Image (cartoon, rainbow, N blue to C red):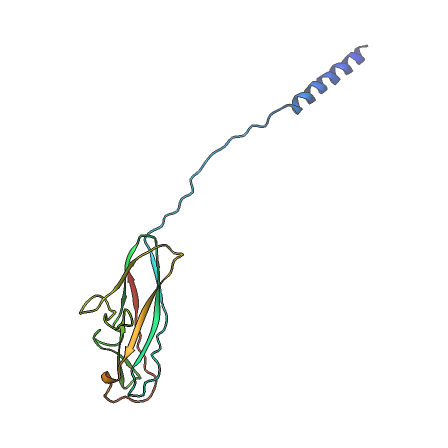
Length: 168
């Protein structure tokens, strides 16, 4: 009899424990955290080559290219072009190693404003960034006039290297 009572007591305890396990609630705790990033005023710039074409001594040459800029939203900037190999913005020069051709770079095809660094009669192109997803394509207008190139001009490929800079 004692044995049956003990078996009943153990079975009852197990049944009660099983019932408690089945009704237990899981506890949940939470924590929050901040995710941050810092964006500083920034701009990027790239420039495409400008090919004026074939000069025969009598023809004027004109062509355009683009400077591409992107800046953080609201960032004011100025785009400047260097003199290249020339000592003056008034008459940029390209060379074949011996001879030179005179040409210049302008802010548009009216050829009114020489694009430089804002000094000595030149202008810079200014703007305000609208974000990195928005490229601004700025036209560079190049012109070589036959009337400015009447000196000795030998055959060959003439080049000059212009540096486009963005100041922000």
